[in-house]
Image: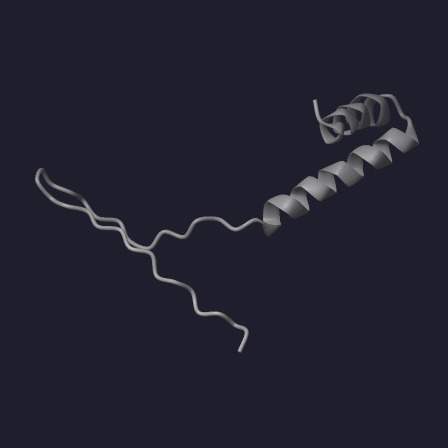
Length: 70
């Protein structure tokens, strides 16, 4: 079990349900950190969707990104 999971569970159990302010604040901080991390992560972008028939061939190529540094 990770420390964030532990603090999150204690925050709900002892803070929200038990009325302990420290655990409520600690649990709230963990929830905010998880929300920020979730919103900041990149998600894959769908470029194309095609239906394939029997015998069709798929070719996937990666295009190198241009660097922003000059």
